[in-house]
Image 1 (cartoon, rainbow over the protein chains, first blue to last red):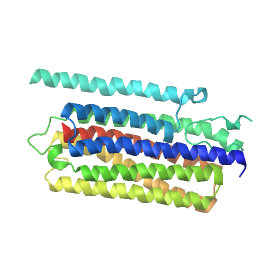
Image 2: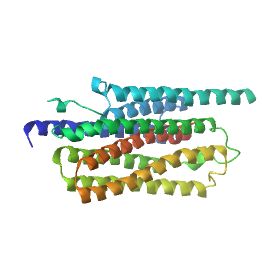
Image 3: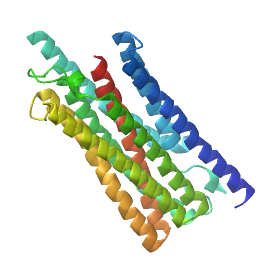
Length: 105
Length: 208
């Protein structure tokens, strides 16, 4: 293996290691907080949501190797479009059905 | 040489492997389209779960049914399996070592089976506590969402077994490599979905 190969391999391996450590920490923090009841309920919910979003971004960056570079534009556009569809469909469902439930109470 | 430029998401193949790389771009983009359709499926199951949160029909709720320890073990198992799949991808990209790829795939498979084992144990435990899918709308949507994820992991495990056999029979040829890349995307994607499940279902259920 050439020196350049070794360098690239080390870089790729480090991306996975960083991803694993970040993901473990971002999972352990909300699990620990919920198990020990460290915060009031609303604080816990916010923390769970924030940790989940950050962890999903870490997974996309470190494991699925999506970044903002121009040669990833197509995949990024596909993902962002899908996220848009998901927000419309899932968000719309929750909004409409939630409203209906509130009005029927 | 442009081979060093990242051509597609997922761990790229070695830069000297130009033929494989060209074929790979197209198939991987197609696989991303599939993954995104899967994302829509999961998000609607999440939405259904959200609308059913209060439909307990007098049955047991998350606090009576969920065990945070099981969810934690499942999370760690799946996270480690994503990492070990990454090691298989590295061995494929740089070492071209079929033996090492197979070893890491076996580790990934083992961790996937640990995940499935605890999930089934958890489901049986929940049903034992009086929470089968037929008990309430809430539980139906819970089992639909988490069960669909479990089925995906099961398919992933079967796929890993098939790929171990293919690596053994054909070595790391172009087709096998692109299949392994797609399997990697699938496996990493399932871990992302699990992050949503443990956050939305287990943790929020135990808090709320």
